Amino acid sequence: MSQKKTIDIPILARVEGEGALALTISKDQITTLALKIYEPPRMFEKFLEGRSYQEILDIVARICGICPVAYQMSAVNAIESAFQAQVTPWIAALRRLFYCGEWIESHSLHIHLLALPDFLGFQSAPAMAEKYPEVLKRGLRLQSFGNHLIRLLGGRSVHPIGACVGGFYKAPSEALVKETLIQAQNLLQDCEDLITWLSTLPILKTTQEYHQEFTSISLYHPHEYPMIAGDIVSNRGDRISVEEFTTYFKEFQVPYSTALHCLFNEKPYLVGPLARINHCFGHLPVEIHHLLQKSNLHFPTQNMFWSIIARAVEVYYALLEAIKILSQARLDEKTQILFHPRAGVGFGATEAPRGLLWHQYQFNDEGKVEFARIIPPTSQNQARIEEDLKYSLNQLGLSQPKDKIAALSEQVIRNYDPCISCATHFLKVELQHL
Amino acid sequence: MKKITILGVGSPLGQDCLGWLVIEQLLARHHINLQRVHLEALDRPGVSLLDKMVGIERGIIVDAICSGAPLGTLHCFSKETVIQSHKLFSTHELGLAETLILGERLHLLPKELSIYGLEVAPEHSTLQEPLWTERELEPLLLKIEEQVAAWV
Image (tube, rainbow over all chains, first blue to last red):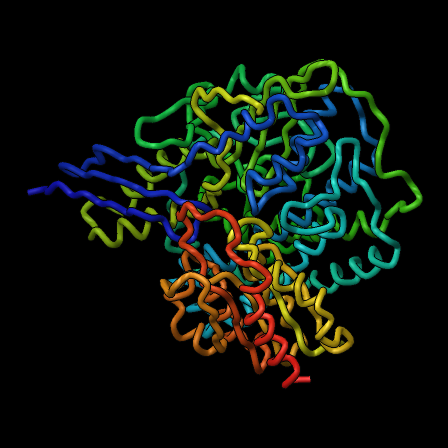
């Protein structure tokens, strides 16, 4: 006789922020599944109203401690779109370099300190350290370099201050560029070794049947692997401009979670590294293609457990891209353009480590914000995570013991590297400046 | 390269800014030989704290501490004490204690490492402003200066 089973995971470990999962299984069916995100009202979109465009970057950097670069870069895209300002190719390259730092830092942290302990059966990274010291040291080296790249252009890795609307306040010195280039080149072997080692992870074998049908969304650019520019594409053949986002993507509230969900054409969808690699695999450098072939790793894939491989590939890509930009540094060129603020609406989208991050601002003729809207990747993934949980738990078998169901649920959620701290939405708050 | 380091960690704002205040005061007092000792404030470094330990023989970390002791209690712990009693120190994953445990297991920590701090109110207390006057910081500053003088 089938029993009713209730599984409550009150706190999700090793994700950024706080979340919980409530699940009810009855007569071998999942009857309720709720991913609860504790998102206190953070009011960032309201904070921005009435502020000058010059203040936006410092404010949005504080939305997320892990991906401040992403928030700043989506913001500058939107602001410059409103002001009809166009940066030079060199400034665009510097922005990509800045972003490379964040991808390397964020992905390395996730792979080594959040995902691997789980996949290898340890409670935490410190517990994993005794058996895998060199793996963790490699991860820390890569993460450290990511922070160094962010500091190179941002001045510091926590809430960087070097970026501005129109470019950067200051170019790095020639000596620092040379030193950074050498450091980057010395890490190439680490990136290759990481991918090769990850290809042998037992979890890839045990979950090889976990192929799902789902929609994925990312930016797409004709000439480069997407970071700071492009149209929005899906794996179903859709292609829309950044300005059209709200026509096709709709946010809504669920009763059990304060964080908003988002649907594309009324369906859940995936954003993040796996979506990017699946759409833009051909844009990766030949070194990466050779390595993946040698390691018997094939994309595209609809297996979410391959997200850890996707992140490692993007670490390698970001390092190669950083080397390319540093080798061709044009330090005598200006790092800022001139422009004039004006009334208007602007839209910007870039690829945060966790996926597409979309901003919209409306300005008055003094360049003050009249309206702001920010849609982070984690809230876009929430409906997809719930869909995945239903799929994956059915694959596992709902008659499995409670602890196995809970363990798989945590792994499934962690595949999306949810940054639950990225909370930008509020509910009907009126704010007065005193 | 300087072999002794003093790192003030935490947010630069609110009660968590103790580490920043201490570094600021130590620099202003000029009692520490800056040719031999590196001082730095770090904004919530997480595991990046381990980067700052590379090549260091002796170190001090200064942080606001929440252990249930009376407010303002001066704490001084060895790294071994922190590592062995990490539940006391950490309120979430990848906090100072977890970072030190990771560093210890990867042999990345200096041979001598002390953690100094003052007891602060719990996170959700209504006490939001720093509690310390210069007078209140004095015992902590003196202890750190004595420790460094013994090492140099």
